[in-house]
Every structure is written in C-alpha cells, then in structure tokens.
Image (cartoon, rainbow, N blue to C red):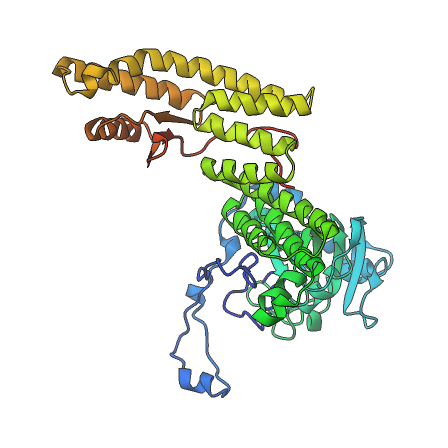
Length: 478
C-alpha cells in the first residue's frame, strides 16, 4: 500500500529490495509473503491461464499494526487533507481545493503536483535508481495511511520500470535532488477501482508528499551488464568511464547508508573494469588515472570501515602510485597502521599527510588520538606483556600461581582496552603458543570482544562496533 505497483507485486506491496534490479549480490526478501486459502495449480500459471485465488487475511502483515511514537505521528499530520467542505467558503472537498494550486502533469487531471521545497541540479533521468522519503494520505484523514518516515526506512525503486504506481513514475520524473513535492494521484494512476484493502478503499485518490533524497543514473552500467564480450571490446574509454562512474555513484549511495559491503562491491567492479581497459594515448591515461584514483581511495575507505586494514593499505598505495602526494591515501594508510598497532608507521603517514595539508584539523585529531593510544598501549604492554610473554612463560616454566596472575592481569588489561574508546583493537605478538592464544581468546570472549588469528600480525582482538570518527572530508568517499 505504498507507491509500489500492487498489480505487479500484489503479495509484497510494502517493500522493494534496494537496488534489487541490478545488484546480483542481493538476496530475495520473502518477508512479505502471504498465504492463500486454497492451493493454486502451478501448471495453469505456467500455461498462462487466468487464476483466481483468495489471500488469507491473517497472513497479511500490516506495518502499521505496531504502535508508533505519538510525537512522530503528530509531526507527520496533514490538516489540509481533513478540512471538510462545510468549514470552507468555497465548498470544495480537501483534494479539490489542493488541486486548484497545483500543476496538472498529465493534462487529464490524473496527477497534480506542487513543489513545497525546490531541489538542486537537473531533473532525475529516466531509469535512475531513486531514494525517497514519503507520506501518503487519504482524503478526510490527517494521519498518513503509510509513511517511510514513520518506518524510518527510505523507499528505493527504479524510475520508469513499473516498480511503483504510475502516478509516482510520472511525478518523480519531474523532480530534482532534495526537492519536496506534494502530488495528487487519481485512482487510475494509483490503485484503481479495486484499491488495496483494508487501508486503501476502491477508487481512492491519494495525496503523497515525496522528498527525493538521492538518485543514481545507472543506465550506463545496466547496459554494460547486458553486453556480449565482443560488444564490450568495442567500447571506448569514454564508455568505460561512464560505466565506472555509474558504479562509483551507486557505491557512494550505499556508503551513505552505511552499507559498506555493497559499496565496496560497486567500487571493486569499477576498478576491475578500468584496470583491464586499453589506453590509446597520454590524454586518455590522464583521464583514466583520475577516475581510478577515486575508486582506489573508496575501496580503501570501505576496507577501513569493515576492519580489513591490510586491504586498505594495499589500495591506498595503489592510489599513491597514481598520485604520490594524495593526502587521503596517506591519511588512510596511517589510519590502517594505527588499527594494526603499528604506531611508528601510523605516525609517519599522518605526518606526511600533515605536511601536504598544513593546518588540517583531521590530521591534528588523528595525531592526538595516536598519542593517546600509544600511551595507553605502552601502559598495558609494561604490565601484561612482560609477565605473559616473558622467555620463561614462552618456554612453559611458569607456575600455577603465575598462570592465575597472568589470567587476572590479562582480564584487567583487556577490560581497560574495552572501555578505551580511542582504541579499536589490539594485536598480540607472533610468539604465542596454542595455550596462550586459547587463553587470550577465552578472556576476550568473556568481555564481549572479538578475536581473529592473523598469520601476518599475530592474534587480533577487536571490538564489535568501533566508534565512528568525526573527520570532515579525508574519510569521505570520492
């Protein structure tokens, strides 16, 4: 009962899988499945014969059956929808009154629009991936019958692909990024003569207030996915850059939603595309490097977000091969080394970034954080490592009393680490035997910490959810 086309997706009307139309990594969402009262003959469906079935009402989940915070509902009330004819001099119904101040987008009164807050940039292109917030209202009701804002989940769909009601496709195609618009949709451009019971009566005109949060023009990447190998070989660098930029923008949108894994897959797909392209001249190489640089930096950033620090270092170094003085690449290497407890290299790269960006607040904060981490780490190291990883301990000569002291000390120090918001992980030395690794893992587990054996770096102990840093631009995607 949102703007989703209920004739196309009748059993799952409320949700569209974000980017599901082209993201091959997304999984089917069966949360909207329903139960029919009687079985359906699949052979009839396969042969194209009409099939009538009745849905069991008890199996239909109503998203608004759960109570919402009254103050949130109050903020989304729209009194213009509920003013009766008797209370107005013009004698018009609420939606008739609204339509007089709106633009007819279809010339037949099926879709009206009024801009409440203008957007920026150009009008959204056909076929773009759209992300919106909206409220939907029925006439004579000031409460929204459906609202992405009350669910706190934006709606995503592909424009012009029949994934939403026709009125949405018509109206959103006239909008710009950040625009807030009010649209009136007649029944034939909404849910028709059937409506969508129980929330939408038959032949209902619906008023939506839609805010276009963002859109991604993904046509170039979509076309590439359907090309044959020979067709792809004929593409020019301009064509490939258009595909790569479409993937990068889709990745940026995922990053904004903190879906770092999906963002990284988009960036990596674009990297692979450009790394395998053929360049004709120096001018093409300059443009190729410019796009690839942004992608390497974005892969590095996603790797930092998900704790893949060696991958972040690798991609940042690739960026430095293209631009040896890139501040973002230097900063991200410094950040990765900090998480790997390689404080000397972390400081080295932070300082290099600072020399290229003197007065940078981001670098200043990072160096202050590094100083705190080093100080805290050294305090822990003195008391814990000297006892736990001494030559006698490594050789297995410790007494039972020493073992108990080591356990208590380890638990105490890891507790300090857990409560230190500047430290996101510890990496213990490589010279641990199996018993010592097991001991550290057990203590970390008791404290709700995660562990990972890293053959290159020893035993990694880290927190389940690290606090995000408030950097201005260095840790934002390109």
